[in-house]
Structures are given as C-alpha cells and as structure tokens.
Amino acid sequence: MLVITVLLSACGERITVSDVDALGLRHKVKSMDESFYIAYNSFDTIVLKKELYRSKYEFHYDCRYKSVEKHLYYNTLRHDTVFGDSIAGNTFPQAFKEPEYYFVNYKYVSDSFATLEIFDKKGDLKNHIIRKYANNRLLAEEKYSDSGRLIAKSGFWYDSKNKLLNKTVFYENGYTETNCTYSAGKKIEAVEEFNHRYKFDINGRVVSKRTYRGVAFVSETCFRYNDFGDVIMTRETDGDGVVRKTLYDYTYDSGNNWILCVEYGYTGNIFVRKRKITYYS
Image (cartoon, rainbow, N blue to C red; front, side):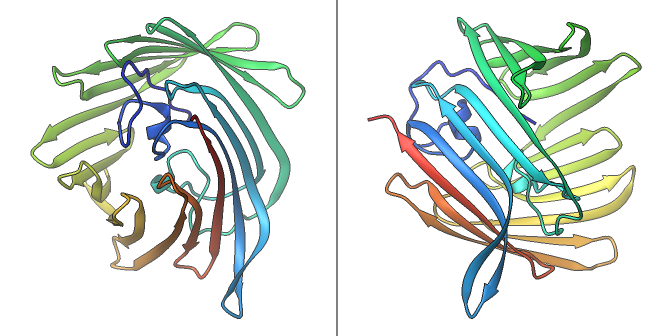
C-alpha cells in the first residue's frame, strides 16, 4: 500500500510526518533506487540469484513524494510488515509471472489536497486517488478507475493528539473498518477479521505484535532494533509454539541510511535489498 502524508515543517534527522520518514530514511533525500533479490551463501559470500522487484522514489525538497516507480517480477506468499509496502519475508517465490509495473505521479494542491495518478507500463492511466488533508492529517480518500468510476472511499478519524482512532473503507458491496485504541505504551488495533495488539518501547517502536483470529491466538512477533532504529531481528511464535527467527544485517552510508540489507530467513533463504540514495545539498 502506498502511503502519503503532508509535511508542514522542515525535514530533519528523524521526523514522523514525511514520506521520507515513512520509508525509514533520514535527512533530505532527493531520490532512492532500491532492488530486492533472493540470494544464497557460497563459501561465506552472499551471491545474488534472482531480482524480485525494483523501485525508484523521487522526493520534493520538503520530503514529500514526487513519484514512485515499481517493477514487480515474482509472486510471493507473504508481505513482511518490517519493511512496510515492500515485498519481503521468508517464503521463496512460488511462480514466475509477467512483470508488473506501475508509475505513480503525485500532485499537490496547497496542503489540503493531493492526487495520485497511477499508470501502467504502456503509459495508460489505470486509476487515480484523491486525498484530503487538514492539520497534517489525512481525512478522506477516494479511489477511481481509469473510466472515472468510484472504486472505494475512505474516512479517517483522530483524537485530540492526532492519533488515528478509526479508518473505514467503503466499497460497492460493503466496508472494512480499522479501530485503534491507545494506552500507556500499548496500542490495540482491530483489522477486519484479524485483531492485532501492539506493544511499543519508549521511542514509539513496535516491540511485539500479537495476532488473533476472533479470540483465538494466531501468533506473536517480537522485534529487536539497532542504534539506528532499524530492525535487526524478528522472532515469531505461532499458536503451536513453533518459533521462526529472522535476522537482518545492514551497511550504512554517511547519512546514516542503510544501503545494503541482508535478511537471513528462518527457512534458510537469504534476501538482499540494495539502495542507491542521493541527497539535496
């Protein structure tokens, strides 16, 4: 899922309101190219095997998206929540598919409205999204098809501290709803048929996530971070007590953004993400 927020203040070392920060980046990033690979270990050397996706991000000087371009090459069976909308996880791609491609162009009308135009590889407009903001908060979103038909409409509600309380998405034949409640150091979020309960550290980072289907426990995932705030380990325990551990190793540039991430999956698979980052002077 693509996420956009409005920035009204300058972009700094680690802020929480810009698109740059939503990707876990620091400083005024101008562009980022990212590639994701399945790899293997050959005599203690990581060798890239297949490219799974490639992305290119362009940012305005105020740290908002200018454009996002993605090439997706493989099917995967899961998305890893550690890396947001990126394809990741410990399941080897099951089948090669026709490469998917989309290009998203962002247009802003003051700080109250934004439009996202999504194009396919032929340059044809597939759909577009209109978003409305107020006081740094996304209030409403409408998604339209290439013919202009309304596909979905979303509403967002917040408390007095700008914390999201409810997100409701309306479709032609129904709706889905996300409710968030907060208490000291803990957030509980109900998402469709699953319930997710989160615990946070003093820096606001997720340290554990418990998942339920109704009242039945499904799994718990614990997260460990390095000094840069990036996840270095996840430990997932399912309802049968089976433990799955994933490790992450990073290489950083002079801006304290990682440019290489090696993921050692619990199934023995190795994944590699490479980044090329440019900055505004």
